[in-house]
Image 1 (cartoon, rainbow, N blue to C red):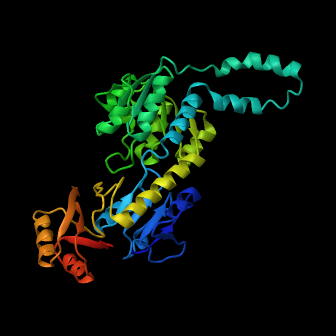
Image 2 (cartoon, rainbow, N blue to C red):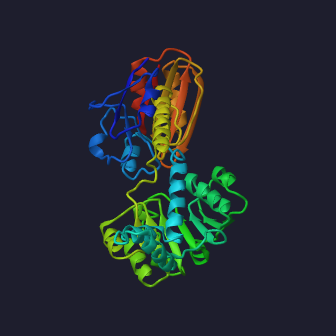
Image 3 (cartoon, rainbow, N blue to C red):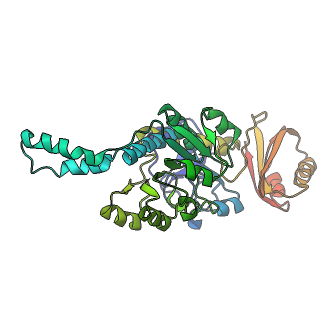
Length: 395
């Protein structure tokens, strides 16, 4: 059985790394030729994509720190762990809602500056006199707009319903699986403009893609009136300059985000309408363990069996093993490839016991169980087929 080297490029939870025990994969901190890479927030580049690399598993949802397009061109599968940190982010969104509605941050700051009142007889009346400055709003009965209804957004929407808020959601790419997770009380918005116009609180849960960069901008924000905006997705999806402009126009009451920028930090030091957190959405012991376990399990199943689950650039495919010899083939998604592969296998005298072929965009992926012994020469012949990207033999 082939053994595989996996190199972590970030601090991965030991609970996750323990899952390599009893597998054919070993963790190495120094290998220059790893078969797999585990990563959290470390920025990867072309220099990390050696000739031996077959997979990258991200212990988290976002993959903007991974050159996904380059990985696809080279046949490197990129995994993420959707949903593993969803509860952690959801709970931080709840904290953000409270920070935005009850003036908690300003209240704490106010009390911490009362050290000159050293006697209770002076402190108590002063608090009573000034607490009206921090009067807030209850969440119940208000409207929560959720942009993006995936693993995190659907949990946030469900939480909003539990808080007796009226919840509207927008997600043009809503999957059937995610739709089943939504309470019936969640009302779908026809457009982002409709959601922004009708919400009191808006929380963002969309990935950072070329198509979503700066999607939250003044063209949308001008529809707001006294709204609290929360961004626990990625900083790229929000146009910071537009947010600051709209804050000055009073269309936004405040902006709470887990993604500080120098411009936002400067604003937060001067005003109380911006509250910044240091990217702690998934920073819980449970979330880090969940992400690490999922990332490792997906990596092991791919390296040992060729199965793919939760890939951002390859199709998801699972095939139970029926023989000791398995071949996986990655090829460009062009016509007649299955026929060429099957014909070549026949010419090599290899009998197919079971196979599956799945495509995604420009990539197609094949898992083929072979009844008889497969020699390395056969792998070289399959690799020489035009438009084949890579071939693996899993004994």
